Length: 226
Length: 204
Image (tube, rainbow over all chains, first blue to last red):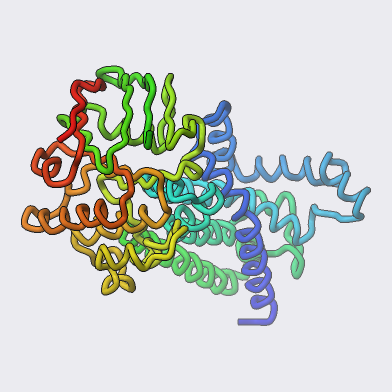
């Protein structure tokens, strides 16, 4: 691979990894609330969380652009307060990846939490455990493989992200050009050979991520069996 | 009074559980047909369900609104609810407030401690669940059909462990069953429940 291709691969892997790590705490919190608590507005939140899965990615990107641009409410505030710009930087790549992969992790973690037998959590409470200890020692370990599987799917989704990223981060070589954007760019320029090489890399990464995720899920079912 | 249940009411699908009960014996059987409300009553006492009305007292302390973690109730559900990702030792020590030696001796658990709970027989699982509950130094022990799922040939032997717990550790116990031979072997009092009501309460 050329230096340019390695740079694209490196940026893609780093931003996808960072976006996956950053969505873990909020995704687990939302997934746990959806799996274990009844509350008013739950179905609204469920629908809202799933929106990026069904909305056109470009539409999500446009919303992010409005929100995070220098004239947007959040982007403007960040610029004025911290002199930080989001749009057309690697940060925008990470945010677009986070928004697009968040629902996948929430769904996987929710299923993983729901599959933990609530009786185990109840008994842990009768043994004197606080809610935090029950979560840390019972719920989380028993849901861990399902959660890791969801993280891998979210990572794969982040790597493949295109529509939202191109709007909010542009396609700036060396700064925001990820695998998907680079493939698109190369095809536009008629450099099909290089496009196919990057395509091969994308397929290998996606295959490994999904295959490993499936493996974690299989072992997760085995682990929960009493 | 070890355990006092006053006018405890909880509407269920087919009837309303409505129970008043004073227990002072070492081991009391809660006896009745399937679906009579035995497990529900245990879950109410353990704090896993909230009654519509009524009051639960343990050694004179009103625990009706006390969360399960502060009730000091040793609850062993019918399916044992052993934590499948932890070893026997980790299960037994999960909520331990007492040194485990006595309980481990009485229940003969020492050879099992480093095993995964997935490799235990039905009888061994019961002993681990019982030890785990006992080590929290509970004010009362709630056992929900503790011989369910134990091989018929092993039941007599597991029952012997319950007798040893009763005689050597003396923790007040409410023992749910629908087998009269268990009641006769173990219990000093018999409370019969049917469709959510106590229909008889007598000494054995």
